[in-house]
Length: 316
Length: 208
Ligand SMILES: Cc1cc2nc3c(=O)[nH]c(=O)nc-3n(C[C@H](O)[C@H](O)[C@H](O)COP(=O)(O)OP(=O)(O)OC[C@H]3O[C@@H](n4cnc5c(N)ncnc54)[C@H](O)[C@@H]3O)c2cc1C
Ligand code: SF4
Ligand code: FES
Ligand code: FES
Image (tube, rainbow over all chains, first blue to last red; front, top):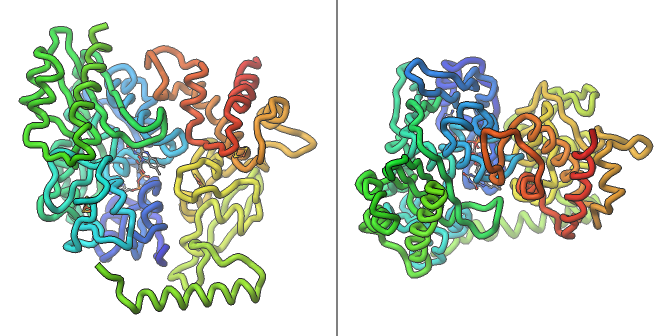
């Protein structure tokens, strides 16, 4: 790791000011992604602002029947929350499909949303990568691409968003609440939170320097049955090759988002409207314009099968 | 793409310097966390296995390195140093985490329990005794992490934490064989002692 200084933030305002004031300063929450990347010197912050002691851990009912999840609530705490298990099952299922018990005990809601990608070339610091070194080129193009994205990519980056929790949040229409260095607060719809790479793949989210995620809010529970299917190379403890989150209503309508296939949780509303027509119709529309490689083209038929499995579970 | 020459030279120089240092001191080269020339060291205090400990550490030192290299509690093992193997599993404030993916500085004021805190050879924790009774290890390298995880898994089930193997999320959690294997999947055993580890945990879980 590169040397850095460390402080424990005493208040929200102090945390935001500390990161905004210093170039190279970063928040650290669970640290399970940031420290991993710092050990590889992919991330080299000069200063860490530890936010874990800020009062952002509560999970509270909202007056409109929704739920507000503090940015520092751990993945375990969210998955074990009685209302999440009962009314937002797709979120609990998505969370426990990711990582391990130990990691979920440490990982936070905001940190999970902001975890960086798992492209093998992003981790190989001797090779070019537009995310790691803007403008250096993309080593994945023409390289080993089996795990990478098939849709929403650009000629500058084809990395997928590796997260599971965000896919569950996407079908629940979650929103991300933040506080900015000037003290103003804003809400960002989960669908706008992860940016597509375009020609600036290094910009992965709309947060400004020093902007702190304070919570994730869920609207009223959507009802229906909740499913999360994750296809991976081993039965546990591996990132998704393809995953699918589904909320299915009795009348056959519902919501669908795919993970492991795009730079953001991939939900296409026009596609999910075709749920009553079956998984093939949904996938055909959801993956319109996809540009898979020879190595990862299998992800599209796999997405269809994962969706079919989720639907058969829902109708059982 | 080619690497700048200066980079190669400086790398070679570093390697040579490290090799000389090792030969002279007869010690392995410093691992990332302990390198000198840091921009900051921090005083911190931990309660480790019930004992109050004060440390003054480079900000880069992980909880794992603090335990092993600075407190000389070498029961906790370093396998991968990246969250992949679970050998470094310890309990912090009663919750299992990977000590390799946490900075010691982040734990100022925390209570840490390592394998040494569970029991000693003359008074073993029931989980330690069950591992011996069931022959649940071969080389033993993963064992401290396995035992810390296993004890925590039973508490997590008790607390209603679901897993990927859980059927009905709303029903009380139980310890089926599928549940156990899923919940212990963050602890890799290279010797493949898994079936005996599972027997040991089920044995302890089944006791009143
Ligand atoms: C071995 C391994 C396997 C894994 N497998 C999976 C998997 O299968 N599925 C999956 O989804 N994930 C997986 N993960 C990733 C894991 O989920 C993330 O590491 C974790 O969720 C990150 O949360 P954290 O709190 O530790 O984040 P940190 O590492 O603390 O932070 C991550 C980033 O978020 C920023 N940040 C944190 N909090 C805030 C905030 N409140 N406001 C603004 N910025 C903030 C930090 O500055 C940093 O840039 C795995 C990780 C490991 C190590
Ligand atoms: S796909 Fe993206 S992350 Fe991977 S090498 Fe190319 S630019 Fe880097
Ligand atoms: S050493 Fe921490 S998980 Fe391997
Ligand atoms: S007993 Fe050898 S690694 Fe598990």
